[in-house]
Length: 59
Length: 144
Ligand SMILES: [Zn+2]
Image 1 (cartoon, chains in turn blue, cyan):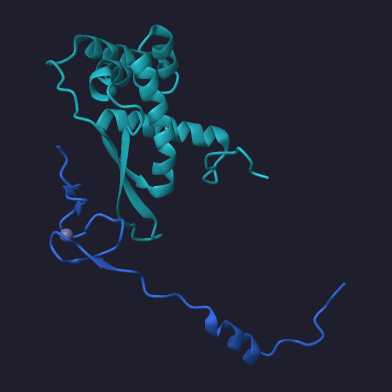
Image 2 (tube, protein in one colour; image 1 turned 180 degrees about the horizontal axis):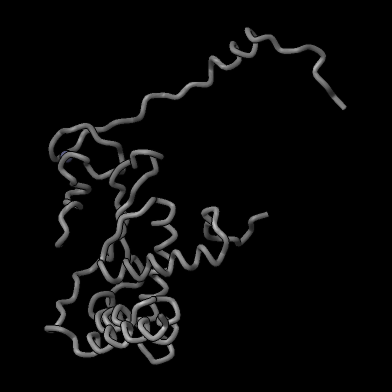
């Protein structure tokens, strides 16, 4: 069975992991109120999605 | 291989899953819109669509099949009364999902599940529905 010949040092391990990182979330602006909002989400400020207020109970 | 295996398991046993979706679909037809996590919302559409198809068929057998899923008799009555008017002109697309944010605690995506179409105005208190509700309560009492 193939087996590592040498222990990977902390330095090598950490260098490998420098590319593992999370990016910033993609944030758009609400066309209604201009607040920052996630794409494909209703606006957390005004509750509008695709021109419709989803927080209102009655249609 | 997962060929032709549709649906998600949601880390539940099949009985747990079906019990949960029966509860959820009952709530959906009762309240018209419910808030849940996104994967559950997506799976709930299957249940809702199937029941609306049954309601549009509207015969006695369909009604019994719906009764086997929906937990409240009054909800079945309302669904079958309204289905033709509300969904008769559509073939699918009975539900709408809107993502509304991330949950504090586990960052799960929360989604609103809504029934499309104009809600049908109920004529006063539907006598049959009231009767069914009473029967439901009676049955529960005798169970206890
Ligand atoms: Zn907004």
